[in-house]
Image 1 (tube, rainbow, N blue to C red):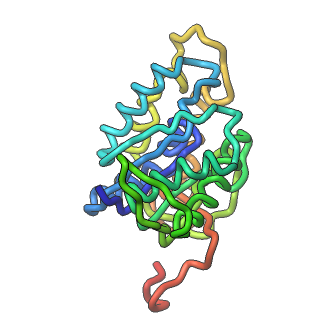
Image 2 (image 1 turned 90 degrees about the vertical axis):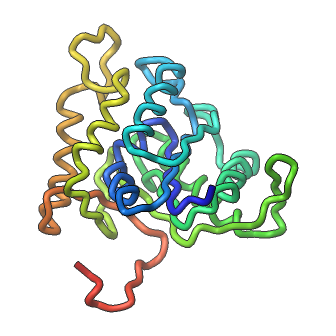
Length: 238
């Protein structure tokens, strides 16, 4: 299956928190979108890897993505090295996405910035034909995504462009709330974390509303770029 967009996150829920509104909108517009999680989030304070596996599956169904895979890298300890790059390259060549969305360029959690650079490097290397990979015993063709965009996570980063997600905010929040083990639950007896307060969920809505306010819509999500964003005509700018 060829994908139009592949969203990659260091942990299950990274994608939902940061760019699921954009994903939902693109799917509604007929695009094929997939999600790749690098780890199972096994170092998370709450829940278990098995619970998060199910939550990720539930969130994927809510969003309507075509595929979701998990590379099961070591949470907190994966590296930007050849072994990990090759694993991502195999996925990129398998699905041949035109666009890759990946972690924030820097963030509070060390896996986010690390995952960002690892994914970006793998996207470049995937286009080099002398790097040989195979799938099911067959050699894969080189493939480099045309665009790599980085979503915004915990830290405030000024976006290079924003996407209007008005009409898709409810679906975004539904996909986030699929991770019931991770976010606000007054009945939970597990330890509190920076993301378990009701204030955190409100901040997800606030950021989207604030970015929307700036461009004159209800809600938006922001991204940073590695190369200039180009348009055919100045009239293309909203």
